Image 1 (cartoon, rainbow, N blue to C red):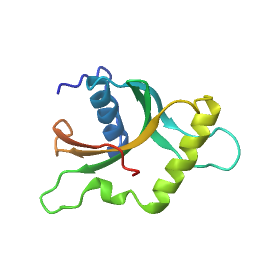
Image 2: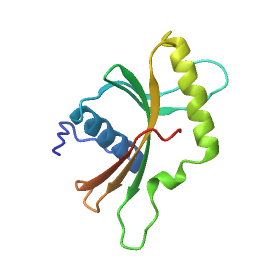
Image 3: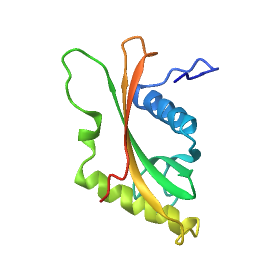
Image 4: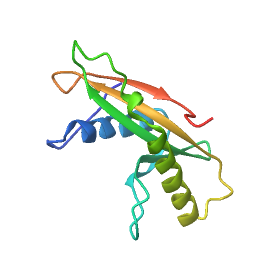
Length: 132
């Protein structure tokens, strides 16, 4: 997969991973609707990294990013805890209510992004339907 970044930006690892994930989804036929979505008022319910749509279905995507290193064998998605899943569900319901999308099918995916030392090479793992 080829990614084009026109502007030189100084992104931290998480931001770069989310940018790579959004491009990956677009290349797979998803339409990205929102990035870093959170409720604007009141107590913060959580944040969804990417909200996308494909085949009429809303997809709430959690992105986890790691820099590749020889000693690190952990999987980025291992950091999606039960508490994180609970927050994802709360903010997703807020989005559905805000958009009046109660009749639309939806699911949750996780994208793991590993970034190489030169910050150009990367590897992606796409886990679909993480709520069962």
